[in-house]
Length: 281
Image (cartoon, rainbow, N blue to C red; front, side, top):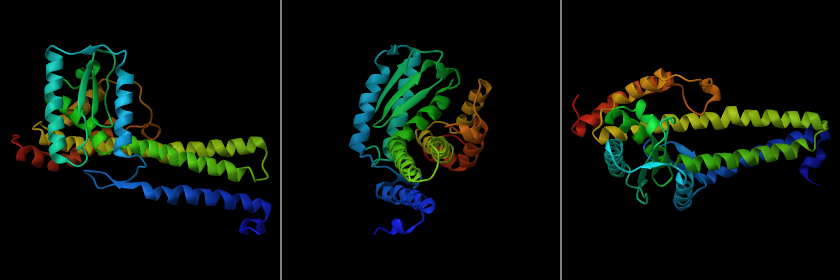
């Protein structure tokens, strides 16, 4: 007889849920890797080849209908910053970037204040962002941050986290099916599990990724010879642009104030890197 069969029915489902959670937590440890630049342990089942293939495909899809700028002052500035940042990233993190195929595109979209970098080094910058990143140093802070997401393999980690979360929710659903609960009660319990996973696990990890990218990106920009102090001015500009933003605990990103405070803490190390690479104190 299975051990769980010895338990009363109203306790058996609890045992099954706990077993599912144990499997969901400990089995993924086989996918643990270390983030280049910070040393943080991360859950990542993806290989670099898989990440890069997904990055190439997504890059083509995302930019298929985009209006690209390939000449002129804006493009020349963006290209110059991207070249210096990616070269610095290669010097600082040669193992992480060894197989990267860096590309950068400038998208003509003045209403979109955004930039991103997909796995493998596929960068896109929207002209709307240049309102806040209005100097090469401030633009370098953005490009460094986006490149840091690829260096730290945040894309693969996010997909792995979602897979692990799905295992937890599936296990919880299986356990609740044995409970003496009405369908409505089971549905409510699953909604609670889902909300707990979203706000207690996935969103905090997303904010961790953003903070980590801020740190790595700050150092890469400094190593490229850009003034790291301008990263703080960038986020002051972003905050001044306003717009409705959710509470930090409900958001994928730290608040502007949190980012500025964190960048201020990191600035002494960033300034040392900057000066070592020819920057003026």
